[in-house]
Length: 487
Image (cartoon, rainbow, N blue to C red):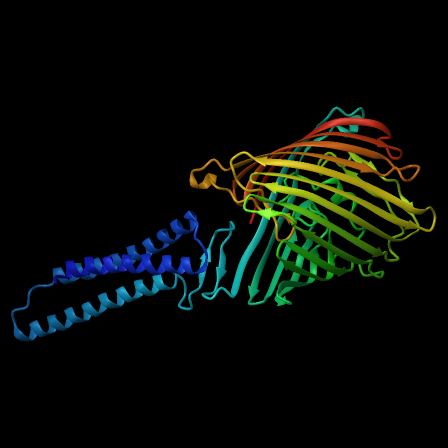
């Protein structure tokens, strides 16, 4: 066999070695997307190109050498040819090794981009590492208010976050810092442990974590179907905030989940007074479920023993998207507070490409001055994915998740389009100076791929405040635009 034939044969073996083990490795772990396969082909094609150049160089050097006529020279030439044959075999072995390990290191390490960022994992999948980040850029316009100071327009960096997460077998971690508002705040920062108890999957968390409370309240801000969380998430929120530093646990069954948590203040606590201690429980159940959808029933309850640094509670909920601070419903300040509690109820369904949910909450604040004060809120919202995707809602955890786009724009598709509508009611009238308000929100979402989307929200709002600069009935319209990338 000539060196030319041998080189062609080596490349053919290399291509076969690259293709078969790589596809076998993908099949043994998880179905590969088109993007994953294209990335794999590009990576291995580059490796084959480099090896082909080396083979061509060997062939050129051999062709340039004169034919030996002296017996001794002939023996030397034969030895050199054998050495080069060994080099060809070594190159073939290198290609096969690259294919068998997925183009990674010898321990079978892998990398994929299915979540919008490189995720590195060991060959057995027990060790992973993935950088996390998000960027939310907003533009809002408010018009129609009888108070000129409420008719504002402006841009906002709603969130700019960086972090990382990973696993070491059953142990995991996550840490994220947010840079919005010209200040740095720590968000998720916890250790986790996954196990099984009584035949059920159980997850334990220690650290600062988003609390499991209501549909929108327990959902990451980049996964909710509207630019801002709903009225139930706002009014039913704890004094200690959306995040809490402490211990929490979740247990998952067939069509249900339950969680318990004991947390203190967020990590921003100054340390000059005892924490507010919060106790939280939530559960959901899918009484009906099938291939086309499911029914969701859920409920939650929390209780807070307020710290000495909480002298009063003054709830003001935004109703015209987040940036315009002037359009809020005021509950009026409640002094000499000791503890507070809230309950919430959830009902909804997902069917094929559509979804419908409703929520209700009542928060009760105990005051030594005025006794019990109740804040109430209701939210009803629905949506439909025009392009046939399934709604991004987790039947396992009962929260919103990323929508899986069938035809991503970066792969030549049109992305996914979603229409949504929501009604929110805010009721703080249990006290003499408490206000009320409501809002209708129309939303259009264009998901470019699984980790980026463009959003348009149009809000028709009404407020009737009894205190503050904008007292009396008022109404207006707010248009919001958002560009979002989250991985």
